[in-house]
Image (cartoon, rainbow, N blue to C red; front, side, top):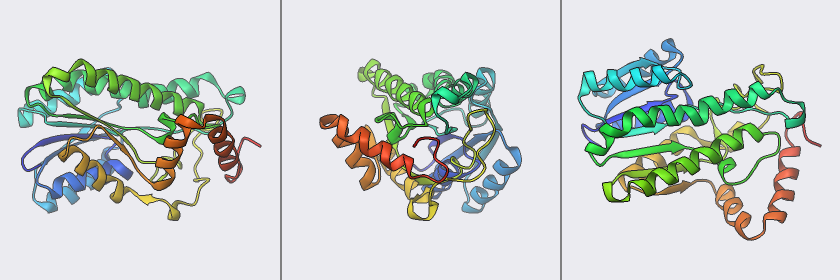
Length: 268
């Protein structure tokens, strides 16, 4: 990855921040983007200590013009793009029947359309270098999770888009990878939206028992280096994806029971 130009969205915390540090440790030049400029600058300071160049861009991926600007600033500074990590994302937790539709729309705008917008403007530059487009998805992109209807919908949509993009560019040597971390210790559950769109605040799960963001980032960077198609991480995640293909009814019952055990679960 030495001297490669890597854009990472949602890079102010969690998996995005960990990816930025991991790519930087391997010699890449980093572009970090997110909505919170203060947090981005804190991440940039860590990257500068590693000794590589970093560009900070304030960007809300749900706004198309800001995604376009992010790419323009990258080209202005570095002149090329090798890898795009579509990591920016938001979760939600509410039963669909009780949820405001606007909550689902917001999740789709960030998770799905954010990937669309960033990829649209970065792709011409990535194709020149036979580079990589990565989508940080979820096991929820393979198996619909109860009380996560909007989140699952956004990840299913992301994966369908990226698979189609890969097939479209079979003759262009474009690398497309879908990374599905499973439950990861990150900030995404704390910022998840409730039925009325308010922020959940506290994670309903035991974060200490999950794979760390740093571990996930290490897998993602290795996946880019090896040009893998798919990453399904954690033993639980791999088992769920495998069983869902052959025993969907059984998996649905197990997933329901598992999610119902969450603290203050909206499903019973």
